[in-house]
Length: 438
Image 1 (cartoon, one colour):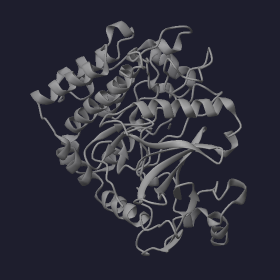
Image 2 (tube, helix red, strand yellow):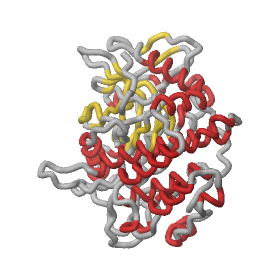
Image 3 (tube, one colour):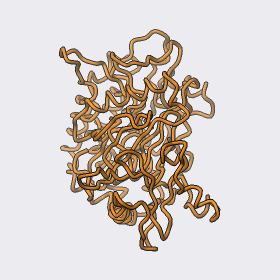
Image 4 (cartoon, one colour):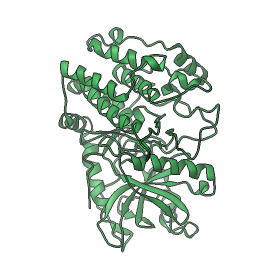
């Protein structure tokens, strides 16, 4: 489920830079046409915290908007119970009457609801309120792998850079397990649902400050029992991460397409280069078909040779020559770690905290502030020093996500990759050790 990726809301400038002072009241005022739901982003101002009610939820801040839905920072505040910050995804108001978009949203919810795994964000609640579909996910603290890598490139800390290959190996090994859980989903008769994420990449691997990675955004995942099928001739996903068999009309696509995308992610994250992305869409597809993968031995000769072997197998042009499962790839990654440097969750957590120390502290403080929004009031005083946590985006030296959507017929779904992000789509998607703040 994708919306533009924002690490700590990094892609959006501070509210004061976007909204004139006289417009603040309009943005925070109730919108009667949507039953109290403000379709514009609700505002977390420097001095006040405002929210609008949506059923049992108080909507605080827009995190991301995509072609199908929007994701908000919200507080679950039932009439009786404990307040809890969540990521709330809702079908966009302009799609409420569109059966195709509603079917896609329901498909996303159905897949997310079936996945239960520490490396996939759990779905907490789902339903329809005032004619609008929604679902709630754990609020995560961390950043998507794409932003982690970008900030590492901007860092001058040699110790962080030296540990990065081993941190990455652990992150991707855990991501393999999360994807394997999704791939292994079965129906009530025990038959595989043939789930394929179809949008695996650095933006949809969310690395928490707790050291755990969560696969996010199953918004365009395929499954045998989907209500909404992809039209023949249309391919969904980011071009640079689409497996070659998906470019062949009528070809069977299975979990090994996700393994291929993991291979691209591993290669790019280790080299700091784009593997198949080219200047034009057509050139990108041609590069994927050609399948040339420069060996790590030429670019990073200090890395273990086994990583080249893993990448070569994951990126085999023919699916039958790849890893049969994501778990098998993950096990080989762990073998590399055992022969070199094995990291546990605590090690990854400490590495993340060292890379992004300010963001880690501000996210926690912000979540605690959000829980001050109570059921009986939607406007509370906030310390002037606390604002939504935002990471300043570093220069990406050409490695920012320039991929194009192959399916012009349907915009990319909301990309839960925000610092205070999403979950369980992906399955948007991802949970072990996620903080409960009340």
